[in-house]
Image 1 (cartoon, helix red, strand yellow):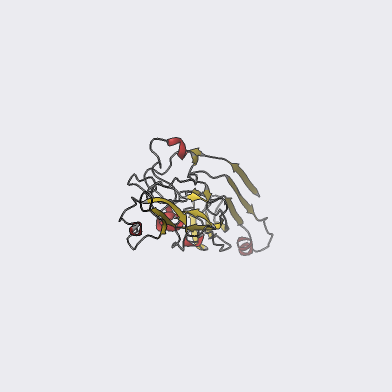
Image 2 (cartoon, rainbow, N blue to C red):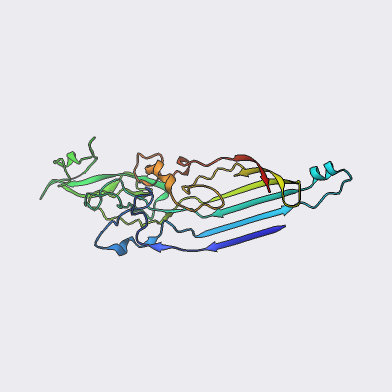
Length: 278
């Protein structure tokens, strides 16, 4: 029997990762190009904890008088591997151009420390009709403009109020200052078990027939994670997140917000292999 196991603790920090827009989960440009330090945080490549174990067990030889029985009862191997790791850091983004630089690629949401759970909310505008004018709370119109403020733009908008004060993440509208840190939320981690049974039937000392039954995700356990390629050798790339950019978009009307089940949980794969080695 051969067993190999390892555990890795690491922490990767940077101020940019996905400049080539490989994922919706991480800002691909700084929120403030004149303050790159504000984007310093967990790297999209950060895997805080990872554990892996792999084993091979050659079953003891069975004794039999018949050559056919020896061939049938011998040559078996049991192989397996298990890997578990923490999730991928992501940024909670606002769907609006908060810093008004005509680019929403990196604009993050506002954190409500008193908020509950993984919830998000939009905002209404606080409007002032000018000197001596009344202050009113206005909802956006069908085009997303604050026409109720007396203009079709945000000229009279002096602030915002959350629609749901119990939400943890609040959309940052134009002029609002984001307070959610870059890559400060972690998606679910995953654990996966792969198993295989080998049968080696020797013709000579160096040539033999190998039959294999291989099971990937042997327990058929869904891993709702953004990690791509759930195998022993996978790394966190976040490419699956391109399929659903709403996952980390903080807005009231987003049913997919921080819902890991928008990603494929994966399923068991069975593979039969026959190989002649000589």
